[in-house]
Length: 351
Image (cartoon, rainbow, N blue to C red; front, side, top):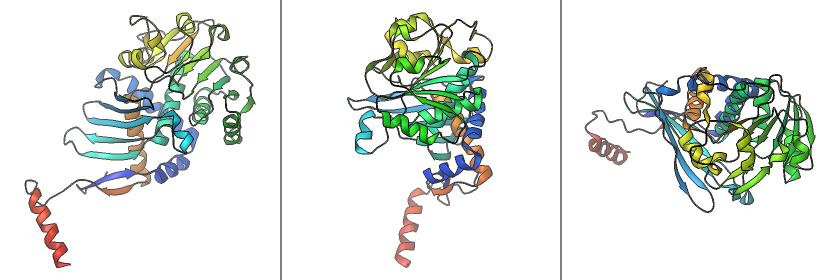
């Protein structure tokens, strides 16, 4: 993108917001979803490993790396549910793309906003293959920072335009209604999860507590529903009763990671699951019939972040919405790094 070897294009929060708004949120989600889907369809080309996680009682800090052999990407991300008590985000993130042939980074970007977008885009891509055809009503349980992104992604990709909201904190639901008021939704705030799922063809759970929880119980899930389980994403953090899992056909991103962090951590290590990329490439079946219960056990995987970074790099090259970050030492002679330091000292003395 830039000929200066010392410079890395940097997308700060302000430029990320400008980029999303210039493109339009729903168009951004639709285009990002296409990048995610394209990379899932070439899944076998990527390096894959469960994310490197450092867990504490308060939360988790993770690194999520991958490469397609030509470009390397990673994301730094945390998850600290108690942060909101101090006015901080539950999730913050940044990411890097690098050229495999030289090792030089080619993009550094904020990923707190971008992660919310890519998580929603991935959920909606999965639902294209797993949700009932023509589904328009979604229960959205957990109305925090991710909720509006999920709603808009499902609207943009599937035509969902009726939302049934529930959160233990009613002010979160009111916030969600306010933020989505101009996006063409019919929205109802419900008094319980049981009420929220009534009439819903898709159920999205996106709660934040770092604990085993039972947001959905078995009697709440009827035939034909698609469950988009987003909130369970680390050991000891789940949202669904195990009996729901036993009745559902379960689809996952990367089984070695999901068995540690997803809803299926509640099940035997050999419980059958289907990798989502296989459904997208036609080598495995997704939704078979109207009565099937499908469950996307979403924990987030590095390839989705790679897709998001690829998309942002392409868009900022087109729009110029980035800063030039002087990040890499670039001496006149590559082997004379110390000489570069001495010349900087001489220049300071002369000044």
